[in-house]
Length: 374
View 1 (tube, rainbow, N blue to C red):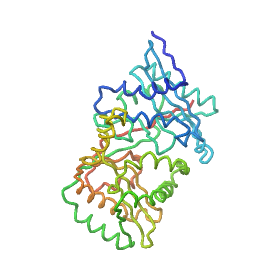
View 2: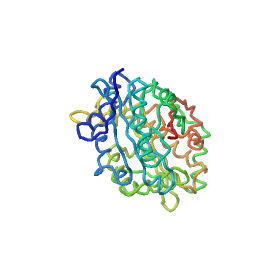
View 3: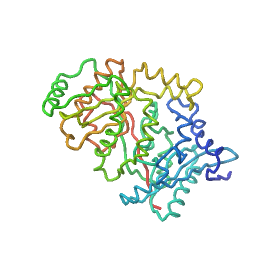
View 4: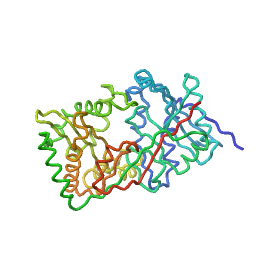
């Protein structure tokens, strides 16, 4: 049996090998969506990723017979430990060939990292924070990945379970085919809620006009999720990083913002055209022509993705989501969008799933994190 060597990533060359490995592993898979290489490089650059200021992280590559056969990153989120008392090693960026010895060797590195830092639990796949990609795909392997969803082979969860890990958290994702006409009860309820709470939908003539609302949106995001036991507020540096990374992709027409009678932002939702096919065509590069594929996807697209929603605690469970969905419907009808795919939602988050209940949502993907005490 050939020996498997697992080595820590130390050089720029090894980092590129770490980043490119899944592109090789999935090169013939029509549902895999590669990340942009430059974005992945910035993820591991302390000058570009503010989370590295309070996270301890390492990356590893597994080699067999002189070939790279797997990768894994291990992370300790210092804020999570200090502010919430949650002590665990997050593992992520985990990919491997269908060889149990390879996946075992990679996860042993996560266990060693945990023990070396006095931690008794590992969980993954996860990123640095709860806004990063998370969860191994457990259903929907025949569906194309989204820009913010992890794609993996069907054998991944089987390996995890064989190696003694158990499911920790589960997420569901839905696909919605938009009806030609909205149900009358939805239209009436939407108007009723706006009138009852004196709410209005904000309109923007340009992206520049929308920009002043970005910081309030992040503040509202923190307020929305502050009740979750695993959520830590974003730092100002992280907010700026997300703005720098994603603002260029946002279309003002795909952003829904709702204000109260005093013009305070009380709810928002972020949707985008699907960039999955554009990312496949770009194959990790914006240059020389990757940017053109993104431009085309933004101009004309039958598919869209639902990314973020924030609702002030005072307005939760008051029907505000009906206003959001009515606006999404109107926007997508104008833009020619026929299909909406949701972002991963915690399986027990029934409140967000109620948003789709009138539109015959199809649960087409599931994913989970796996954990183990060490």
